Image 1 (tube, rainbow, N blue to C red):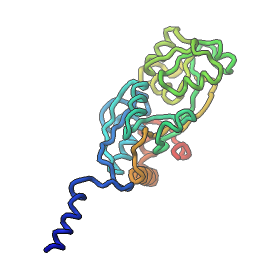
Image 2: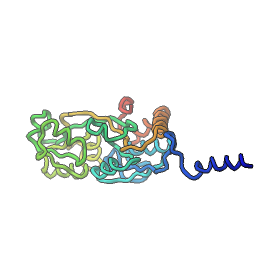
Image 3: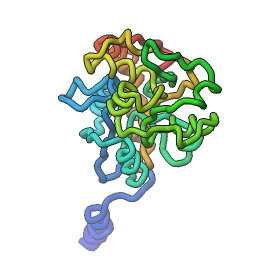
Image 4: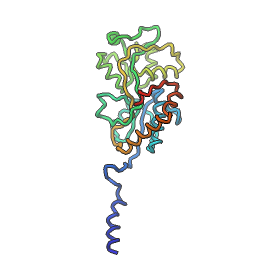
Length: 256
């Protein structure tokens, strides 16, 4: 009788308080923030939210890690993800400046960053040329850091809140060229009903790996489940089919 009572009292704390061991699963739910960056992320119904957001939602379901995406202007999404643990963000370029600020969970894709101009206008082919132009960039993007590093004065950079605003600024003559993801800009141009032949690409300054990331708070067990889910979706062809559905060419090395 006394022994049974001692066992009951000994196990009582485990019933009243959650486990605090390093391997314990956290109770705080995940949040997922992003911005409208077609074809990577698109505000819409499930399964039609852009190739990378669809991929992340597939991964989260496979890994049993539920999170509903929320859309914000990019600068706001970055602020939320950098301040609140267990807030996932995509598509985030992995840069030296960001390296220590985020927990890098999974590489999703690799993209090229280039200057874009209207056909009929001079193509941007050198940095010397770019330094004399008015350049459109996305507010909060690491692209702005790259332009500054390459000697383009901040006063010459027109910061827009969205890809759509950037492209309208180009059409209205507020800027001479845009700098950003070739994939995102060419797709957004086409989706808006514009003629793809009216936009030309120029000098590519860099390529960058696009990641799913968080400020912190993701456990090793959760991370392992994400990677296992990714490998399974790559192996059964789900990722390749997803890219084809969006009309995008896929190189396997871009995903690892």
